[in-house]
Length: 454
Image (cartoon, rainbow, N blue to C red; front, side):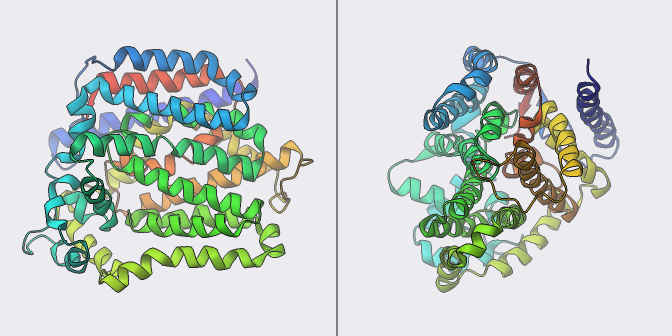
């Protein structure tokens, strides 16, 4: 065993230890003080070993992806690889969801008392509802919104209202929307990595966003959908810079704006966007006009929402009040500020822990290479450094969310958008098939031993 492999295993072991400590200490706090409001800390879940109709399919997808995934990622034509990644991710997410059955795993998730589909009838006049939205965020106001509706800008709910309007009614269609769209997030990540760090690293990374443990939660909440929108915003920005494309820049800006109006916390994606701009600053200097469509696209949703009468900043201020009115005001920051990171380990897996260790090594070794643009002649060291910068930007965004105190618990779903951008760190790992198997085993164990709340 090489020294580097031992260190990778130490990193994975440290991550596993963090999860173990979070489980033990969290269980004690919940048992004695009842302040965590989760039954199997640090995740919102119940201990419930079970199998279901999705079990055979999940096992088949996992085995096929581990055995054939790394080799196919190298050999398939690029566009075929992207299609295969989406299809495999879709099958993985859906099969894991169906372990809990169609209703519990897919159709019923968005229809609970806290979820978006409960309020569709209140959006019969969308502009009027948007104007009135902030009047129902805080508890004690007339007809306060359910927790998830109040906790997000209204475009999150409007998505499901529009699905209902076009005839795709009910939890089944809403769940499949989140699964199908959410599964494209891995494709967006690969597109961005290829544009910024080269095709070789994108191909090495490809199996890991596809077979991520995050899939356990990706298909059971709207956060998978939010993650895909945010991922495509970054991917289009990377394409806009490397191809000097004005339409891609406009599309990126539009999706960044939409991201901020789907989830308040995803404004932190500005850090990842900033990293992309830094990596593409040479292209931006050569064509500064790219900023114009980017900013124009970014302004569309804020301007439209403001004109219709929705005040994003006022809504966020009221959300903070609502957050502290609920369990968020009781859950102890001192536990969750580090236990949230244990949730991140569970959704990104042991391979990502080892990959992040190697990411740190790349940054320390390759200082001074950030300004080099990727070309056909770009050496591997520069490409690896650029990928490391992208991964670290995502890690910083996640840590900022953690320190804010506005994400105490349930981050196994809330942080899915950030987790997608940590997974490419696995491209730095040797023996990818073994690490990929570890990722799949973790996901299967989580889904079959726990009955997750999402």
